[in-house]
Length: 330
Image (cartoon, rainbow, N blue to C red; front, top):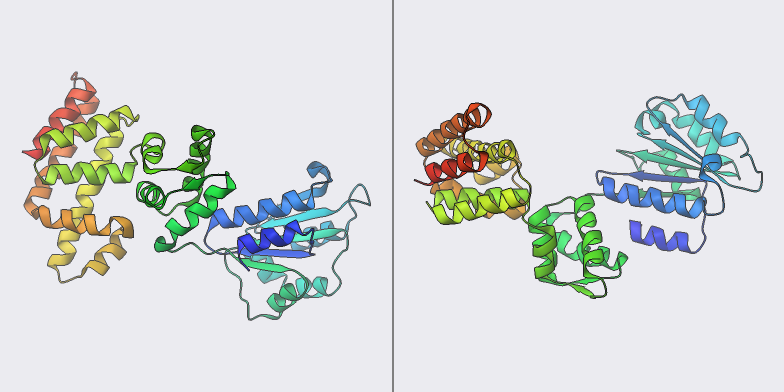
């Protein structure tokens, strides 16, 4: 069962004594947890019916006592949530198994875990009386398919080109993508479909994409193009420290990639060590080929020099950055 099937199930007014959400995608976990809270507490006061614990900070006895204690109003349900529950589960496995054989009728337990072994007796009991959902991080190639589904949450459609562009701008971060979709839905008003121009207009120039474009312009000795991109960065609120830091970060990554390849490593080793986002991998290796190792060393020294000047010189920030970009290109 995935998060969307789970939400559909809740809409049928189904309630369970236990819910387990686990995995490496925090966005899906938050979505599942929020859905349970809305569904379970819709007729109650959350301040009276919702109790939240940190599993690594609270004893099992306290949590089980809370499950067995009736809510202030006997007719109302209680939701007991244990976040970071891995430690709690490991220490209280037998007590949880015993509890699930006769769970409290007035309470539901939510466990939020990093990992969950489906082969255990406890997992079998959970699936028998409750719900467990693995919230897995989406593979990069699935993001352009997920975005249209999420856009419908905001009553909008999105073109395939716009969805792909949003991924390229933001990367594999569902929470950030979702925030952009929310902003786009407000920005568009009555317009039904988000297109590429809307993404460009509102999402703006993403930092990761921008630093790739800037270093690419530098590699091609394109002074005019590099200065234009610098202007975009300044317009979008980037400060000098951040811009120098981004450039330095990218130059060091390119330099390290050259070293790995020189030592006999392959592109897979480079992407793994430097955590190159797949969407940017092709462009990254194109830049690796454009720079000589000695050139990267000189540019890195120039960046360090400019960083010092930005903190000590009387020159204006924009002029310093423009001089930096010019020197990087020549």
